[in-house]
Length: 218
Image 1 (cartoon, one colour):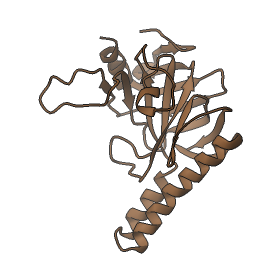
Image 2: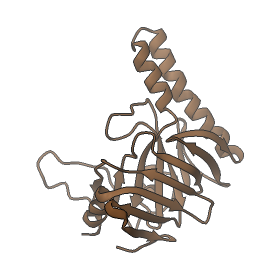
Image 3: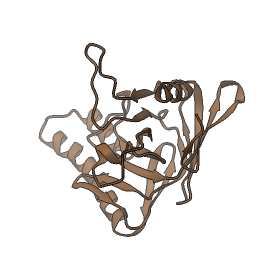
Image 4: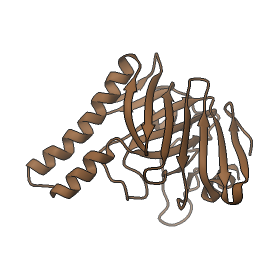
């Protein structure tokens, strides 16, 4: 199955280089990470997922992200999902979002990341989080938490992230908590990149193009 093959390649990859017509030019480290697949097969005991199905996703290496990240599909915020009218550009250094620009969507995203930081501070003030944990949650509100690849040809970008992130010809990056629980945060905000190209760098230097301008090469 395609999802299984993509998972296998992501598991082998040490780095992925993502580019897009919208201006994304981002390198993400994947060394030591294991991908997960949501292919709609929930037959195994204890398995589950969300519907519609159709994505493979992985947590970036801690601190492993450098370059420009441009969201041009939809974007989840603390107030809900917005379909972007103009792109939102993020500068990523050392795995963290350092700056955001681009119209109303950028303001909403910046506000959402700030809210993620504030929520950690509020819990600390209320005595519900120790200081070190608060600092970790606050810091990771701007950390890259996920790379996902949409595999459902029937899914469309409609402003419902459970469907949007499955859309064919897209990948998504989340800012905030990751799936390996070693970069916890109180938010996990997905943003879509349309028509991306993803080149994987495998152990030993081999390169594999996973997606080319939105077309899967697997």
